[in-house]
Length: 85
Image (cartoon, rainbow, N blue to C red):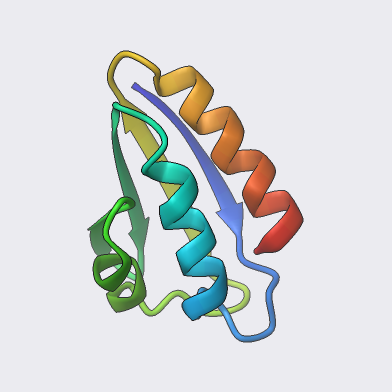
């Protein structure tokens, strides 16, 4: 299992546009990818699940990937977070 933590810097938090970008990127990988925020857990490949996290600016988002391409997935999602969230 690979993981990283990121503090959300987007003023509106993890709203529809960045959540959609994250989901689209996560769907490119075969491994299981989970997000954790606000004591909630979500499948990173499902938009409504990611939106239900309610992650706001300043909150920590934990991304965990487990499976065949977990390292590549974590690297790609970390890059996305640094650029978009």
